Structure formats: C-alpha cells, structure tokens
Length: 88
Length: 230
Image (cartoon, rainbow over all chains, first blue to last red; front, side, top):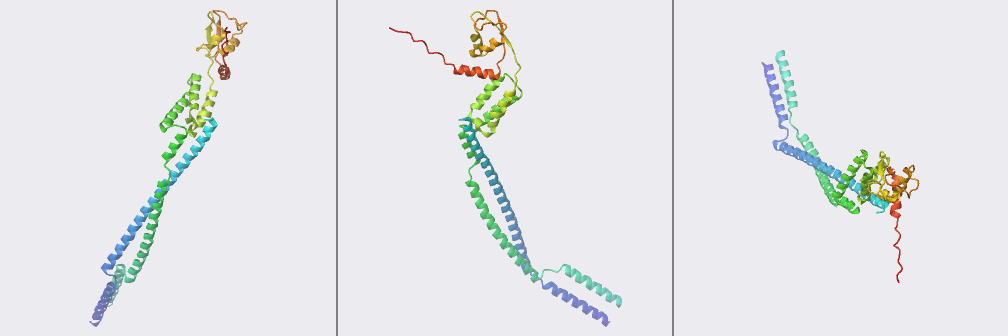
C-alpha cells in the first residue's frame, strides 16, 4: 500500500515539474509580438525583392536604350561618311 | 508491484517525450529570435532605403538619356528625309532587288531604277549603302541579257546617224558605228546606204552604251554661222 502511495506521490511530483516547465515559457502577447515582427520582416523581404526587380528592370531598360543610342550614333557617323563618299 | 512500477516508468518516459516535443518557446529563445528579427529588420530597412535611392538615380538617368526617336530624327535630318521616306525607299530597294534577282528585263530599265535609287541621299544610310552602291550594281553587271537582234529596213532619206538616233534603235546617233560594223557586208561606205537594205541592229553592250552616251553628252553643237551684215 505504501508503495502505491509512493508511486502516486512520484506521479504528482512529475505533474508539478511538468507544469512548472510549461509555465516558464513566454506569454501570448510576447508570442504575438514575435509573430508580428516575423510578418514585418517577411513583408520587408518581399518589398525589397520587388525593389530589386524594379532596379534590375530599370538597369536593363537603360542598357537597352544606351545600346540603341550607340547604334544610332554609329549610324549617323557612317551616314555622314557615306554622304562624303558619294560627294553629296 | 514490479509491473506497476514498470508501467509508471513507461508513462513517465512517454510524458517527458511528449512534453519535450510540444514544449513552448523559452524566454531566452524568444529574446534571441526578437534580437535576430530586429537586426534583420534594420538590415532590410537600410537595404530598402539604398534600393529606393538607386532606383531614383536610375529613373533620373533614364529620363536624362536622349530618346531613340530623337536620335533617329536627327539621322533622317542628315539625309533630308522622314521615316516615311525611308520606309518607301526600303520598299523600292527591296522591289528592285527582287526584280534584279529574277532578272526581270529590260535590264536598262532596272539600271535606270537603280540609278534613281543611287541618286537619293537616303542611299547613304548604312542599311542601304552597300546594297544600292555595291551589291545591286554587281548583280546588274553580272546579268547578261540575251542578245536580241532587230532588223531595220532603210527608207529614202535615211543615214546611219539618223537610224542610230531613232528611239526604237539606240536613241543615240553617236552609236551609228555599231550598225556600220555589224553590216559591213552590205555597207561599203557608211555615207552611202540605199532604200530597202535590211540592216541588223544588235544590242549595245554596257561598255558601248557608256562610251556612246559619253560622246553624246560631251557633244556641243557648233555655234550658228554669223552672217555678214552691211
């Protein structure tokens, strides 16, 4: 009978320790603020990715424009040279 | 009793495991994650600010660049044409190139068309220059038109000069030696030809045509004779 009691005592102690462990965590509010921060970081990452895409797009557009302009300037120079060759 | 003890041990073991798995975040872990997220947020915010500045600069740079259309307008201004003129010219060049490739005669007409295209300032555009001034003339030169011989029957009052001058013959009186040389069996003296003689009129070669055209263009008629007045 004593042994049964001892086991029951052990069980109660275990539950107590488990409860103690469970209660030593963070509060719901803290968890909520953490989630909020995670969401903010995620949003910032998303926004930065979008900005990076916009930057890449602009860089590409400028490079294309520059390439076209270079081609046009080259053609202007060649045309002037051709006109001279033709004596016009 | 031993069985009871064993059961209790198993329950204890399982409970500890379950607790370990469902264990909530400790304050230390929470703090660590908060610190990590704060740092990340700061980095990301700085990065965003930098990206926004770079985008602003790129937009300004893009706006500052000359537009391609303006550059093309300047190019067309050099040759005194508009985009429409250039488009039309391109169509003409392509049409002529097709005709020359297919050897759609008469060759002289094609040569005249090419000359017109070559005379245009638009031909100085790099897009056309090589084609109009090198490629097409070369093809035209390589185009050998089959010789078609025409016969001409002399009528009263004809002379070789006047026969060569006729538009359906050579349109150039200076080309009369060609008729003479081709009909030497019938013409003993080029100044003497007779009605009903039938002469062969061969096509002029490009060289001959150029030679006689040059003679014609260099020809200056003698000034009218001055008559003595009292």
